[in-house]
Length: 284
Image (tube, rainbow, N blue to C red; front, side, top):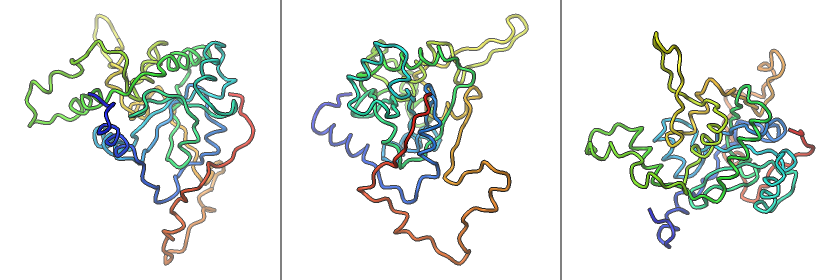
């Protein structure tokens, strides 16, 4: 599918235009920036039209996934660190993520772009430091690849058993350009990175009397953001706006009186709002 003509460019801009959030995101973005670890997967509840399409296709509130790379000094491999320096024109202390975006392909950018969004951290349980670096390095090697819209459409056909589609349409998942390796989607590039160290996401389980328990990796092309949320091999970490670190926290929540109405004007984000400032480095 060609995406390099003016009409396609207009369609991409229309699909990816984000609507303003009607109320503040329920997570503490500043704390996320401090507590996140390299190798963590972040799930994003997007606000664009294409995000809504992905939510419908996957039947999940999470429309996007990104891999947290760390700050520049967190990347051990010198060659990879130098490549990031060339790819990213920002401060060395910025929290960096890798993602595949429609219209942009696989890119490296700052986590600050999602300061208005609802974010969930999915942390691979027990992943060693060395393997985290391998996952990050593999993901960075994908930078520059295009976004595979065809794969997204094929994935929709696979997830939705639409009875009105001709059977032959439902049996050719990923058969066109099956050897093409220059395009990907957000979850696929992350799944590929974890597969290099044999870390499971949602493997297929086989159990019989002869071979015992066996696990089969899911085809990365079938991966969707919700898989990291469902996976028993990833810990779900949340940082709400109101801390819940102490017992009985709910007694001190700033509940409004029942007869009060929410102020819609105050809940609208300002167009010129800057990402919240954060200081210090976690060194992770």
